[in-house]
Image 1: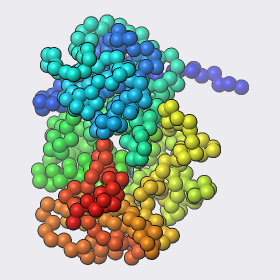
Image 2 (image 1 turned 90 degrees about the horizontal axis):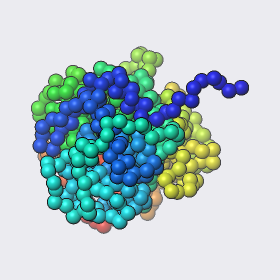
Image 3 (image 1 turned 135 degrees about the horizontal axis):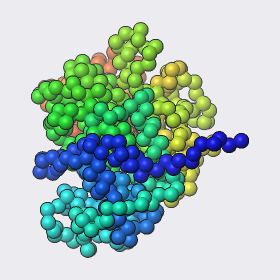
Image 4 (image 1 turned 30 degrees about the vertical axis):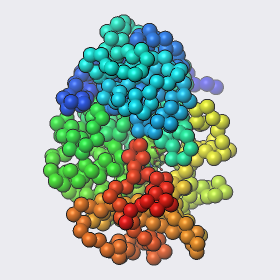
Length: 542
Ligand code: AMP
C-alpha cells in the first residue's frame, strides 16, 4: 500500500519562494572590487532572479542547457545560482584557477552555451580561456559602462536585466532534473563533472540546516569564504536563504584582514572556509586582535583542520570551530564534528581530540570503512580503511562517464578515496587520501597526522608530508615545512623530537625540507602532486 502524502517537488525555486515570502527583508551583502559594499535583500534578489530567468530564455537558453559562471563570491553570482536552475538550465560554476587547458576541457565537456563573466575576472578569462567555439554568448557583469573585449558579441548583465520581464513561471517540472554542475579539482587526469539535481540540492539544503549539521537559522549571518565555484560554496547560498540567514559575500577577497573586517562589521555568526584561510586569519588576529564574539561556529573543511589551530581559535579567541568533511561528489557535506552528550565527562584534551576528528555522518549520509577486499571493517577507532558513502546528495556517476569499479561498489556506494578510522560512536578520523598514504615496510603512516603535529610546532607555519620511494621500506615520509617568519635557525632534530612525543619511531620523516611556501591547489589545499613532482625533479628547496 502506498502512503497518501503529496509528491511535493523538491526544487530550487521552492527555496527561493520561501526566502522571498518569509524573509524578504533579510540581507545579502557583497564586498565589491573597489572595497565598497553592495547591500540588498532577498526580496530584491527574488525580483532580479525573475528578470534574469527571462533574460536567459531571451538568450535562447533551453531546459537542460549548461550555462557557466566565471565569477567571485558576489550577489550577481548568487542571482545566477537561482536563475539558471529555476529557468530549467544547469548552473556550471567554472573554477577560475584551473589551467587554460583544463578550462577549455571543462567548457567543451560541459558544452556550455552561455558564460557569465565577472568583470573583475574578465582579463583573466580572456588571457587564460578566450573565445571557445560552441559558446553562443558571453555576458559580463559588474562593469561600469562598455568593456573592451576580444570575446565575440559581449553582452551586459545590466542591459539584459533591464529588458527582462518581472514575471516568470519557474520552468522546473521534474525534481530529478539537473540543476548544477561542478568539476572536481582533479588531482590526476582530467577534471570530472558532478551533476547535481534539484532534488539533491534541496535535500542537501535541509540536511545542512539540521541542528546536527550547521543548524542555520534566521538569526545567523553566514559568510562563505569558500569560493562559489568550490562544490557550490558548500551549499551555503541555498542553505542560508532557506533558513532566512543573512549572507555576506566577500567578492574575490581572500585577504585575512578583509575577511576579519567583514566578519566584525556584519556580525557574522557562521564563517566557512578551508584551513589555509583560517591559518592566515589566525595570524592576522594575533597581530591585530578583533572582537569575534558574534561567531557561533567557524566552519573548517575541504582539508584537515590542524588540531592545534582549532585549539588556538578556541583558547585565544573563544571561537568555536566545527570541523567538517565532504567532497564535491557529496554536494559536499558528509560529516561534522561536534561533541556528544556522553563526552561531558572527558578531559579537555580528550574533548579536543574528538573535536579535531572529521566527526559523525550528518543524518542523511551513510558511511562505512572497508579493507582492500571490500570487506567492512570494525568501528574501533584503530583500524584504517577506505571510506565509502551513500545518500541522496551523493553522486551516482560522473557526467558523461559510465560508473566504474574505481569509484563505485557493486552495491552502489561511492568510493571516496579517503582512508579513515571510525570510533565506536561514529567519529571518523581521516588519516589520508589512499594516494597520499605512506606505505612503509608493510605499515601505513598517516601523512595527515604527521602534518597535524608538525603544524602544532610554534616555529612551523605550514607542513605537508609526502611518500618518497625507498629501496628498503618501499616508501618513507618526507616532510616539507614552511617556517614562521620569526622562526630563526631551526634544527631538524627539533622536529624529530617534537614528533617522537606523539608517534612511533618508524613514523618519523627521514628528512625535513624547508620551503618558502607549500604549493596549493586551485581550492587552497596542499598540492601533494606538485610537491612530489618538485621533489622528483630536485626542485624542492633546502
Ligand atoms: P573537494 O571535492 O575538492 O572538496 O575534495 C574532497 C577531498 O578533500 C576529500 O576526499 C578529502 O580528501 C579532502 N577533505 C575534505 N574535507 C576534509 C577534512 N575535514 N579533513 C581531511 N580531508 C578533507
